[in-house]
Amino acid sequence: MAAQFGRRLRRGATTTAVAAAAVAALSASQAPAAPHPDSASDDRTAAGATEPGDSAATGNSPYYTDLPPLDTPNKPGTSVNLPVTGSAEAGIPASVLAAYKKAEQGLASTDAACRLPWQLLAAIGKVESGQARGGKVDANGTTLSPILGPALNGQGFALIKDTDGGAYDGDATHDRAVGPMQFIPSTWATWGTDGNGDGRKDPNNIYDAALSAGRYLCAGTRDLSLATDLDKAVLSYNHSTEYLRTVRSWFEYYKRGTHEVPDGTGVLPATDTGSGTSSSPSPSPSATTPPATTSPSTPPATTPPPATTPPPTEPTKPPTTPPTTTPPPATPDPAETFGSLENAGTGTLTATAGEAFTERVKVRAKNELGAPLGKTSVTFAVVGSTDTRFAGGKSTVTLTTGADGTVTAPVLTAGEKTGAFKVTAVAGTTEPRALSFAASVTARVADTVARTDDKALTAAPGTEFADRVGIKATYKGTGVADTAVTATMITDAETPAENDKGPYFKDEDGKPVRTLDLTTGADGLLELPKIYADDTAGTYTLRITTASGATLTVELKVEAPAV
Image 1 (cartoon, one colour):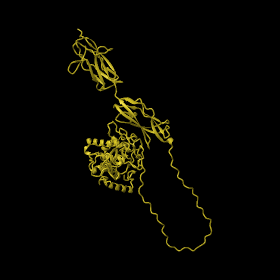
Image 2 (cartoon, one colour):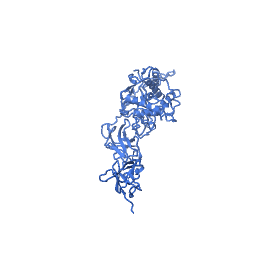
Image 3 (cartoon, helix red, strand yellow):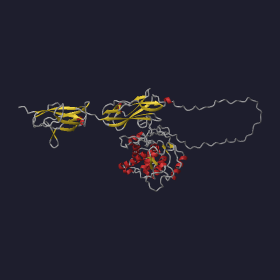
Image 4 (cartoon, helix red, strand yellow):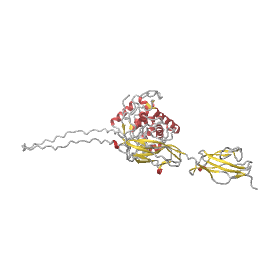
């Protein structure tokens, strides 16, 4: 494989020598020699009218500048069908490749005019995360550990203060680029999409990230089959000509052919450290030329003074200067350094709609020696499609561990939306640790069914009852809509069985029936259909039950009117 230029740089840190080498490599690999002439000067971000810069998808965070090998998978002009084997650099991990292709198909159905090629997503994924760090993802496509860029604190990078309370990036002070496609949280909030149908929008999931990146690149009226629009789309992702040049080179390389490799076996960038999170590299020094050293000029010729013999003097000893020593860098105390985060006894998180959860999330921070660590900030966040919130209506809250290393999240209150979601706990800034807890909200189930009035229900033989039966299904006094109800004319309340005589309902064809399955409406209210009496006088029982076991009995009398 040809030599590559494997340095992960911040914007503007590329040296003259590296830039020149990159141009040479691009020319040799037949990649585009330069972006479209007006790409860098007339770009706008995917949001539409926002000026490029720190508002880019990645916040212009660092990226890998490795270039593809000079020997491309196939020669130009040959088939672009995927070969079974080929250069190691042409291999893309199976789940990652599937996510790119799925995103292309999804955009083809929702925004066909964009003409998004999956190879563009592959090129961006290569320079942003080395294809999810060589395809280190689980069966659902989620990275085995978070991929985080450096804190965007204005020190060598853009200054972007926290926008997500640390929910995605574990940093409640500044934002960081997150996931295999390196979205900053504020951009993810706008463009994040569920790409694998699990009901979540997770920037660390390659399916979600790839589809979101595709939507971002396709924003507005872009047609990515046009060089100008493609260049603008890439520049909106990271506003750097060097970035565009690098992405373009991988784009052309992947278009000439690639192949699938098992997850976790992809080729990592040359500077990859093998850790689970992206780290902030030191910027490359700018090429500088040290000032020239010049000899002192020769003084003009002068007439020397008459020679004299000075009196003897005691030689002067130079002052003694103690040698200067540089103290060694301070080594962090392992006892005070955050090391891990663990579950501290959180129970099952489930609640009925509108009620408080009885369990609360509790975690414990430990130092590098494995002992409890106090004064550690932990950010709790409600994640997923739910209206469940912490006390005060907050979806994110940051608290500090006590002396025993533990901290408990505020009480969760379930909303009206039922289903599953997650609660996350994140601690640490240099190497964040995250825990995820499954939670769910179940629908209210009626525990009581009662009549809405207490009128006596009577009818003469062969007539209909003048009053209809109204009921209400409730849970702790609150009406429960859509409650399944069964109404049956029974023989006896002690040993109930359907009666074959006495009062009855009518079906759609007007035929007598003595059992009906019904459903309550809004607020749990239901009015039963008309009830008819046959010719048999007597006292009868109507039993009404719900699926949860709530029961109501109603007395019906069939008697001749008094004379």
